[in-house]
Image (cartoon, rainbow, N blue to C red; front, side, top):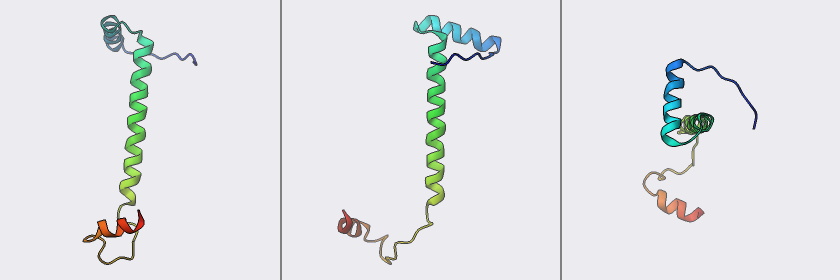
Length: 77
């Protein structure tokens, strides 16, 4: 692990300290888990945004795809 130093507002530190006492986990562990969750959530939001941006940008060439999508997928799967 890499050691990092951060500055916290006093109120945030007190909340972390209380959560640490209640959970039995270190403040460092609570902060690491929180950062992991936040970074994962941001990553997923970015993936969804890219997926939504691509919606409607491609054509299948099939005129009845909306009505017969199961039939067309069955041909390919």
